[in-house]
Length: 137
Length: 236
Ligand code: HEM
Ligand code: SF4
Ligand code: FES
Image (tube, rainbow over all chains, first blue to last red; front, side, top):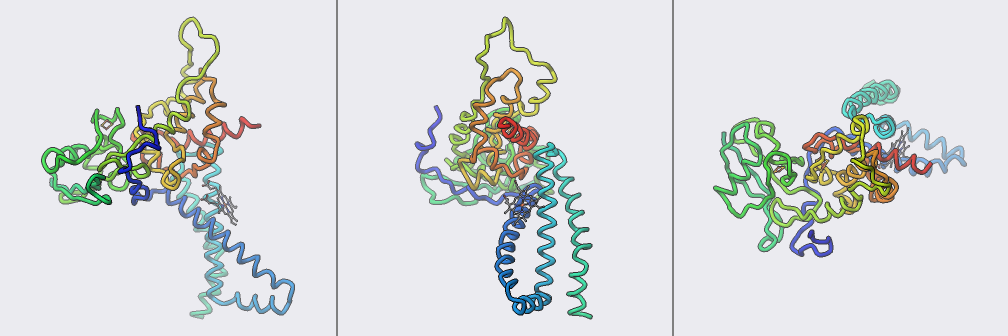
């Protein structure tokens, strides 16, 4: 008869709960999905907080000017990347769970990843352009 | 060739914490990883402890973490783990269950989860004269999932298990799929009550570590997704 969990010998240790584990496509996709998901929540909170300025035209203009600085442009580009990746990998998860596309999960990841890069280059071009001209133009 | 065999050792009666120990072992590219452990046990240190029985991928007793991934030691070849002489292969216990000694984990929690999904045929209907028939098409639906040997590689490869030891895990829920999709079974509702919970299906984030680790190449995630759909549609 197996030991009940509660009667497990004291000596047994849970020390191997977090052992280094090789990161394959699926785990990589998930880690990035969670990272971007949490980052988007943080961004959304900051964004709404800053929007308080909408009630005061002068403060709003000052903010908009501030956001033209290169650091904010780079942030904008990262935001675009996070949204694009999270949305496309979200689609991947939906296809796996609803349509049973699990056998294609790796190909799906790389295909949608390529789409993400294309969208980031196309959508991010104006942002990159502004930053490059700021520093080198 | 000569290989370094790096093993995570732990003896609760003398050690405060696990530590790594490296041994040298001769190896042939076509040896199994299990052969290396046996060499260490027979010729280097007889106190090394690990589970094994059939040595042919049938009994499921020697699932462990090899080179950072859960595998059956008897079913993985040296040539698939190293590129040449002097390379190192690492062995650690399955992550996510308490260690009893060296590479031996306490499996009681794993099998409690297994029992909790009622892994047997439930059918209170009148018994037919002969066996309950199943068409080849009906069997096709569950064939992949019937290949499970309960080695635990999958459940202990899942980040959801590491984060929450009470998470049912892929092996137990695969069993729920195996019986729920069996056309001779009537117990779907009872099993859904167990798996359609916060410790069940909804902690599966389609990470695919289970599929990657399964020595029987079962597409576990595919069947868990099907079980998710059954759980949702059964409430409509
Ligand atoms: C087109 C838009 C979006 C799609 C298609 C999408 C899709 C998904 C999906 C399918 C999941 C479940 C992941 C899983 O089961 O592993 C998820 C998780 C999540 N999403 Fe989104 N999402 C979108 C937008 C957003 C936005 C705008 C935010 C933040 C404000 C967000 C935050 C999160 C968070 C925090 C999680 C939990 C992460 C986790 O469990 O690993 N998502 N999303
Ligand atoms: S599904 Fe595969 S990895 Fe999981 S217990 Fe069964 S045989 Fe082992
Ligand atoms: S010893 Fe039986 S499965 Fe490896």
